[in-house]
Amino acid sequence: MDAEIGDGLRLALAEYLQTRRALGYKLARTEKLLNQFVDYLLASDEVGISTSSALSWASLPEKSEGSWRNYRLCVVRTFARYLSISDTTVEVPAMGLLPYSPPRATPYLYSVAEIMALLDAASILSCPQRQGTMATLVGLLATTGLRVGEAIQLDVTDIETDRQLLRVRDTKFGKTREVLLHPTAIAALEKYRADRLRWQPASDCPALFLSLAGTRLLYCNVHHAFQRMVVEAGLSARSGKCRPRIHDLRHSFAVASMLDAYTAGGDGQAQLALISTYLGHTDPAATYWYLSAAPELMAAAAERLAAYEERS
Image 1 (spheres, rainbow, N blue to C red):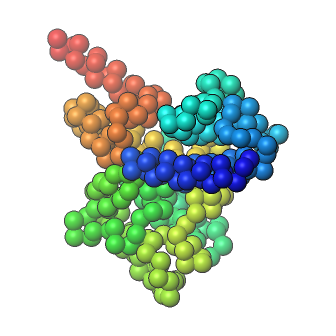
Image 2 (image 1 turned 180 degrees about the vertical axis):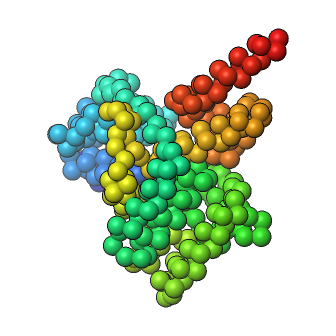
């Protein structure tokens, strides 16, 4: 590709990312992939974005999984669609060129006993700091339903002890929300904050949860440590689609909250709206899916329906 065309493409990419980020998208992975795609074009004989170049790049490496190839092509397609508004020479890859229908995982709903076993399993990690960090992080996810990325992005100043809440900033959809905490959760965070200062007195990183290097945690490292805890806690897959994942702590929180509302005789619809807001969902449909895989909730709803019919 001609260098001048390449420079124009990089400028267009910067404008594209800026436009979408203004709408609340993060795009960290998208930026990395699209820069790799532009590098690929620059190293080829292509004169612009075409369906064939998009397919060739998206199919790399040769033995990559279908889900990864499909994702890469989707990233290019969205960028190409943006460019095609002002440049009719840009080809927008059609949908379905690299079809992939991923099986949706069945949520692994943790019992209280399993969550306690996970917290105890943090003791297998290499040092007190890692043990305390993972135990506190997992406990926070289980009691708040935060996304893992949201918890990792928390700063020390996001804990408001007096108001007993967390301020969750710049979330998945670029919004900020406040999450109320139980006094025991506040106490656990305060203890961790004190331990953090003792473990990393010289760190100037604002993050609440710190790595051994005194930096913000990386998701991949959190995931690896969690899987070790899962094995130590003796948890195993319930089926091919239902495996203990760290994200399922969020599902478990939502289901437990609804069960508590049913047990207390509360208004299920009102509780659902509250949970949806608390979890940071922009569409209640996402919350419905979280709850649909819980037979306990279906049984509770059936019991309430039977009781209603008896009174009628």
